[in-house]
Image (cartoon, rainbow over all chains, first blue to last red; front, side, top):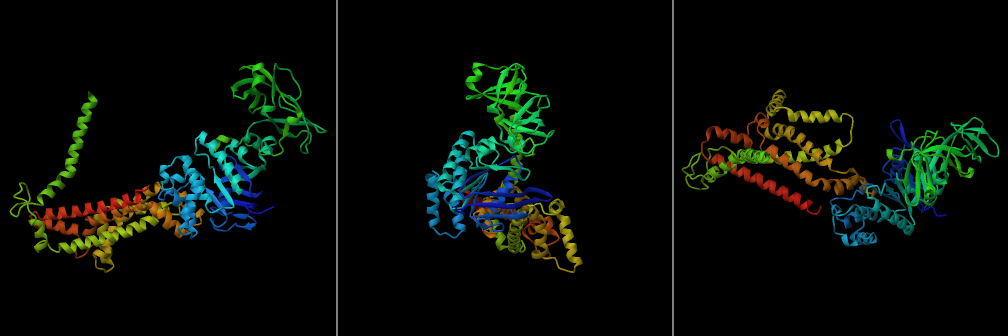
Length: 370
Length: 266
């Protein structure tokens, strides 16, 4: 396994005064992988990115890139390139000189302009090489920023919320291009975002952060399907989080909700009787029945909102649980047997669809609070 | 109907203001070309360059050339110091260092202080220390109490539109502090620095109250002109006005050309 582009974070901590923005983070990011760091604002993801880039120095801990300790290596000399959220193109230089800037700094002679033009052509802006940045659209500026970041052949490309300044249409298009570029180049991409679909769509590895800690780091499918804690389940979305108390521990866990509902599922961690637990059930695994019949692995509720989403229908329930409870019903099922506002229903699921939430982080993980 | 009335009233007020602003200047300009037998008021008795020639030929205007030279030297020195100090001070003030607030208000106080009092203070200080007031020393210092805080304020406005991530991007490309300064910060801020330079030069060049008690025995141009108004009663005074105005215009044209030249591509 080649170590090129591999990043090792060894107990990396960054304190601002008494507050640890990043708190003893350990992580290995494989060389050549696409890694997304996600979390609400202030979770430490940007600080971590800036430390990898060398714009911040860790208070303690080590950062290794490609097997080399770069904790105190100057930015620009550690094989990384950072693409800024606002692109940070130099307003006094044309596109060619913007892209050639890192080469100029590294003492490359006149040929740097040729190489810059080649790179611009690669991001489909070859015909605009003599324009000034202010003459470009947001999407074009981003391509220039990308070209400038890639001109020095970095081992690692760091992207700080690269798509957040673009409109929805461009965002989806650039997302595809980023993924394609990463495939072509085979270098490590670390992409900071606060948009869940972006992280899930792009990443080989998603790192979910909160309060300076890594909550969970895994393949997006694992993150989405088997969230580690109530925070991850809520923040990544697509899940219902249910609170219950353990009744009996055996081959399967028997638990009881506050409202008296009974739940059973396979154990995922050591539990004891009387323990308060939370588990998650994916919204698309929930089925609804009319009426109020009680059953195991079911939750009574009242329909408070119905939204047609094209491929499925989102039905929101008010349940005895304090949290929102949502079912995503297949479109054909819903219209064969529709539900309306105010309907009394029972939401049910299969025991194997229950994901016990092992982690204790119970914060709301409000994605809008960034 | 009413809005139309308001429009005409406001237009008239604006017209009067423009007249008030430029009327005297234009009158002085015209009267400086007064014929040799003409006086300081209209009507014109012919058109000539007599009074311009008189300025250079006659000795009754005192050391006008010397006063002009001193004012120019003072202005250029004040300009260079103001640009340099404001540039670095502005960059420094971007970080909230300990005492930055106090320092800022200390700088602003010298803008608020009446200039004559500042000059009096500097003059008294020199006397107390047993030093002679001198245009290049106490004079320059007095001018800087006025141009430096002004330059700093302009620099703040200029830096308001400066995006710190440009410097970060340069560092990310491997640039050293010197390279960041010379290849990114300075060129991007250059048009703003020309504005600071322009203010430094002109504020010093026509400074009167701060000069009065600080330049010592040799006058600067504003002091010289002021003393001439007391005993000279010829249109030569207007000729001085026309010449200095022309010079100011030339400086402004050069400055705008410089801004346009560097900003053309943006």
